Image (tube, rainbow, N blue to C red; front, side, top):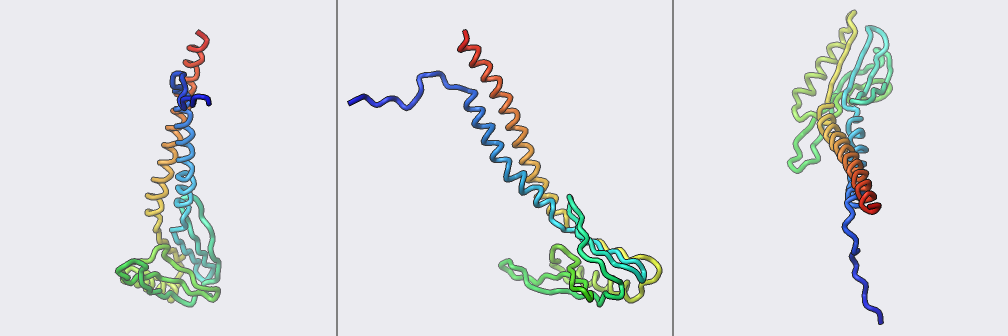
Length: 188
């Protein structure tokens, strides 16, 4: 029977291997942050409604990264604004509200996030109902921006991912330095 071999190496520990493994780990750790950060920044949380008097209404949903036209319809196709009411999915089940534009082509929510105060939603409903009842000569422009939450969370995720990549690059440069030192020691 042969004697068991020790599981450790008799060589001096190699710093280059340790820093290379740490750099690779940082890159792998950064990937989910760099995927989720832009995904969260791309939440279409800004709603814009622009109507020309007697003309076309355009509805846009925007994020921090992109802007999409959701609908285009004639002002005469607008049937009104209603406030949707429901209960939150949370434990206390508080009522939540969201104004919705009703057109001949469908219904379009005017808030990305539901409001917890009914007065906010009914104020928007009254403002838009009045604007549609008396179009006048001025164009109608309504903007509701709920992008702050996506900026905080998406920006934090993206920042963490970038910082991890910077740290991985620093570890990569340390790995190169350690490799040069180890090669010089072996050559000597």
